[in-house]
Length: 464
Ligand code: PEP
Ligand code: MN
Image: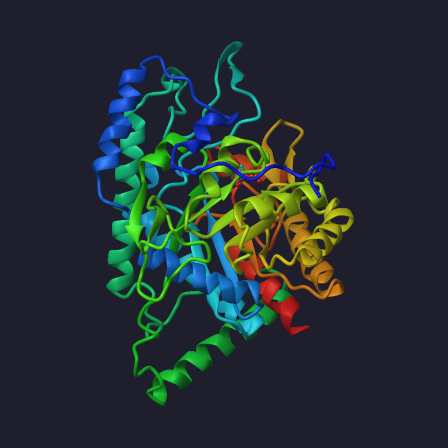
């Protein structure tokens, strides 16, 4: 049933540019359209950043997550900046995602799929196109792919589209190099740095988990269980919000399917449309209109996709959306990223689970406990409280269980650095501490200690 009671007509012919015939939110207006065309033309001649083989490998792993056989950990900055393309922040993020994944494997007894919000998370949807800075109304910062954060760099600059390509490619090149060189080699001991946990009981609980993980790894090394070299590296996929459709279109290529993969509604020529800018892309909560440009674009690509599901989503609208982007009901093609807020989740998630179950779609249910839990301090700083973040996650775990479903993953805004952007956790940050190292250019992120602690808590939940 369509949300207005009427059944939608069959979708028209899809092409990488068919989204242009739809109403599209968050579009960008440039002063110089000719420069935009030439930037996009340039990108369209550059090689794919990721390949169909990798994309389909992730898609089949996500099938396992949808079936409850693995768990999806996705995390990274809210707004990745071009200046984060440096060795230290990239290394810190890889290590953090690796450690969190080990904790989650221990807790859930399932393999963990890792996806970074990295190597391309450069575009931000904004609730208002302008903001007032120092009494002057100026265009909002929309992410490095469009304009700059500095007040005199707010005019969209088409050269940034090309720069986004190169920063994505450079970041991913470094990730690939570091993984191949042993940054995630589990034969090496990991530094868990739990000294900050002042609460004795928590300290013991976390140490017990770390000891158990370290013992298991040592045992495997001792008995020579690593004959195939699986302990020497891990997979780490990339993702971003697919917001700037002209950029995504210029990296959408008709390519040969990898061996063994034939899509449910294939064209018969052994090829399909791959978005080669990232392995996984998602539609934001502000751009998921059924008849909008983003949904149109997303329904045609082979990549696994995510859809943010906020509190305004109606259950029948959710099902209709799934029918549009995944008419063949391919398992694991779609990840629903729910982000209601710790107080709203109880009233919403259950009906969404039931609607999806009734439709026959099998999705990855991923909880984003960040975006529904943003608050402002008395002095106007945007933050999130750790206990609300954990509360939404534990509610998600419980509600899924109560509905015969299961949580398939978590989606976090985090950084490997010691920032002070979210309050609470064992680091015991208060509102007054936020200014110590508040460096985000968009939403507040968990720092490395808070992110790891969240993984401990979720793991503990599974073991209860
Ligand atoms: C985000 O993930 O940074 C974001 C803008 O989320 P949402 O679309 O859920 O608001
Ligand atoms: Mn965000």
